[in-house]
Length: 468
Ligand code: 5AD
Ligand code: SF4
Image 1 (tube, rainbow, N blue to C red):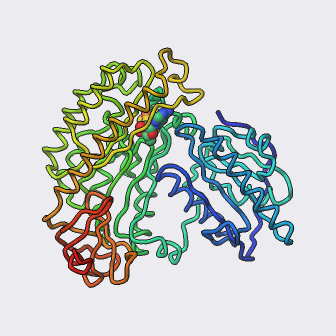
Image 2 (cartoon, helix red, strand yellow; image 1 turned 120 degrees about the vertical axis):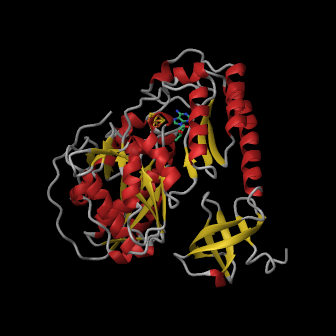
Image 3 (spheres, protein in one colour; image 1 turned 90 degrees about the vertical axis):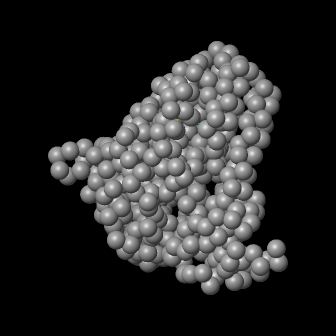
């Protein structure tokens, strides 16, 4: 799927003039992390981040290709950005346009053909070359950099300045693994992100310590298939994610750990034990099952059955009884009958979720699912999705309601919208609104939940002040 490099790239010069880059991020948490890494790479060349296109010298679209019409959305966004550029040019300014992420990887030089306004295209494995790509694009040449890099991107990506890290808050993502070898038949990730690569323990520990040193209190380990992580431990052994979590838990000042996204097949004993032993490993697990029908799971190449999943959840819950689940579901995969869909509804009822994401199957060109017979009509998919979402929304409400009257630890993250409020995060990821007197950003405070709002919880430290 990768396109060749159009031009050879010269070394980047060092430019100390301050310029501004507006990075627009689509899709998953990995893209959020990558956008920060790209901003860090550009900082070396004098760029600072801005949150508005109006005062930007460069717009970088970090795109997502996971579902429907992703490329089309990018092309129409580029059209809008081109207008902004024309206006800037009319006023003596300019705007460089770059496209990164999974659409960049999948479309490659096609992007420059269809949208000649774009100055450069860069795929996710080569972000460490961003400075060179930009330098080349500045000479007026179009650059497409989507060859899979053989060198380790993470070795070459610069660490952000401490000041920048501190401005990013007390929670942080940390990519430990990229790519996927699972080849689920609906999914484009193995083609856009390539095969699985795990970062070594020493690299991960260094980055985690740097983050904690800059005030980070909660780290979420990221990977397309994070629990397949198997990194060099520096002791002639390969470690698994469970062992890595124990090691990270030793870092002084780090208070919470999470990881996302996992595959049921890679939930090994050591990882389940980590959930049993590490109180700082939050009791919330995103473990997508996708479907409850064995026939569909097989067609999806998930390599487990509905009952395998149920048994796995039982084991995880006996190790960590307060664990809550989140998941992903696809309805209308080719060949899905009413009965198959009922199996999905049943597994949702059996397992129960605190939160979940559900999608209509969308054909992804180049994946096996796209060529399967018995594609499900759109109206059937819509009807099934509505039913599934009604059930999942009810479960989410029930879960939140079950927290009322309970005490919980909350990590304070930021000031609230209203004066006198401060917002933290529950162990199960809901925002918790507290009175500002409970503590400072970065503190973990124990509060009692008095009320549920649509997507957040209100602690009793504030309920009286809301007049409720
Ligand atoms: N159609 C619909 N949903 C998809 N996902 C991945 N590929 C597709 C597709 N082709 C969903 C899966 C995955 C989540 C990130 O996106 O549920 O877990
Ligand atoms: Fe895609 Fe996840 Fe399946 Fe990998 S495991 S192919 S990322 S859905």
